[in-house]
Length: 143
Ligand SMILES: *[C@@H]1O[C@H](CO)[C@@H](O)[C@H](O)[C@H]1NC(C)=O
Ligand SMILES: *[C@@H]1O[C@H](CO)[C@@H](O)[C@H](O)[C@H]1NC(C)=O
Figure 1 (cartoon, rainbow, N blue to C red):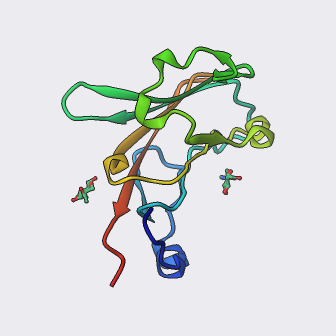
Figure 2: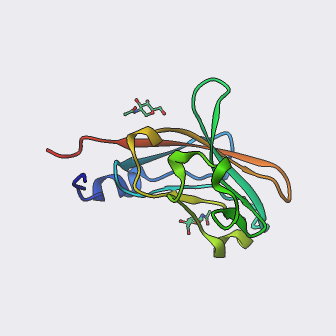
């Protein structure tokens, strides 16, 4: 078990994610290893989302499946976990009550150094929309 340092320095507004309105912008989310990370993905339109997918770039053309939601079903809840990368099983949460306002953000719990990297959120409806987020997992915060 790793000790966690307070996160106030990482969570101050100056380090917060920038607006996800513009999909060409890459949000950078810093998080201390072991803490939970919020990966933002929201439509500016406020239209409801009923299908979305999160993947992680793992170099080259390879993508790891992080999370998939389809009209109420998701991994471990009406959908087999076999397609979800083992790395993320049981560690991803979404915000059910936010979907109707077009918000498909997720949290990755208990972040690991191997989670560091670039993620893509794809919203399929009402129109396809992609958001890239860079998760920067910072280890060695223990002095
Ligand atoms: C999306 O939902 C998350 C989690 O509730 C929240 O932190 C974030 O501010 C929301 N984004 C927008 C654009 O409303
Ligand atoms: C995390 O990924 C970023 C690029 O997304 C890279 O610059 C950084 O060196 C990586 N950090 C670690 C600890 O691997």
